[in-house]
Length: 606
Ligand code: HGA
Image 1 (cartoon, rainbow, N blue to C red):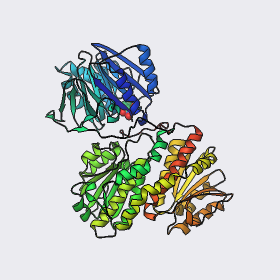
Image 2: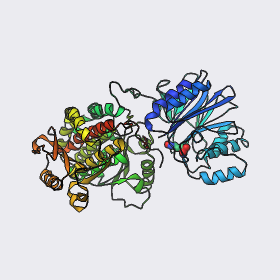
Image 3: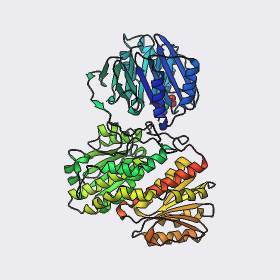
Image 4: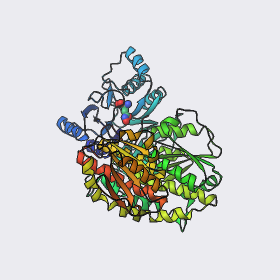
């Protein structure tokens, strides 16, 4: 979602800020802005649309500064306008950017208006800057004013503030929205994601919940939620994949689809010993927890939720534990039942997904035996706040529509299944042997791309589609449908194929493509009957089928043969053709593949 970049330096920081925003563009946003301090002169420049519009506006304005804050906004409160873009300014003195939502903005706005503050935007954010300005009149430092203000905010924020009276200070505060400090020599930085700062530093400090920090050119002071000075760990970033380049690919999404064999290889590396999983990949206390676990409760959103749904099939079949999977935004607002010896597993690419994080925090008060996360970002909130963590090694994922994060999550969940089976004395060798073949199987599957690109032509004029699967391929059908919706804007629904006759069969006609995922498993014959039900009603069917499953192409059915794979890894393998199909349909339709309309990466607001 929206991005923050800030700098306090001796050199001009315009270019650093704009480059930082560009590196966060993939997260999705609708407008951008920057506030710069040149000595004690404050200049603000904003633009609706892409960062390049802001860059042009900055050039035109000819302003520069050695201290600055910049923002890409994904509107939650107030329309997409220049006035609503951040930074917001109070009394030409204090400048502020904000990620998140201030839930009590209405009452704060009324009170501040009563005190004479004039509001220039419709955002929730603007109350923050005016309240800090008001408190600045009562406190001797900006730090103290921000510390006092954050106590009055309900909701979530990552925020960065400066006062034009001091160009050697920015104050930052985090509660529910991530911020990372980047350390330089005689200059320091702040951002909502370390990717933004990789051109200027590799040394970072992640702020923790409730932290407020004062950053100058030569110092960083951090205070916890109670105002005590604290030290936070300094880490060196080891991001190797350069997230800023698409290389030979036309879109990040395509690059990331093709990176999947490598991402899976990296995720497996050093974590398999012969036919066993190295359980410490999950954390020090994993072994005992896996021995005792009787139930797994999975919580996630979007694509990650689909990986959790696949895991339910695996955990109940291979590890002998019961499993529930729930969408985080539902789980967090209902009274749920906690099973005996239940392990809570959250899944999130970014580790900052607001609903999932809130669900974890709630669950920690509910008596789960332990919490575990499957996550792609080291140091993220979910990783820090969970007892156990399995890090997927997908590398930075830039395309808003998740691809390699999903397949590596599936790998993590398969390894979790094998590990629990191992600790319970069940067979885990079948899983481990199948996982080892995965990178090569994924490479083979990518060779289907040209055929799928041809097929995609037939979808370009369609408005609806139906994805079908059975067993562990049902969530893969759901994921396929989600990908098509996200990037091609074609309405897509997924059904467990056995459910067709209970309703969706009524939708079938020649304008409704039906996409079927059909590996050769014990459900194949049942699935074939479902396909015949569709055919008999004039539907056009596209089947991704195991070579040996004997589907034949004809006037009403296009068959794309996938090499045979062991059933346990089939959900991972069959994901790829569906990703490719969505990608090529979107390219033909001319949509913004990497930044689809209305969507954002890393959903850090509720
Ligand atoms: N609520 C603020 C910031 C939005 C945000 O964090 N988006 O990701 C606004 O609407 O301006």
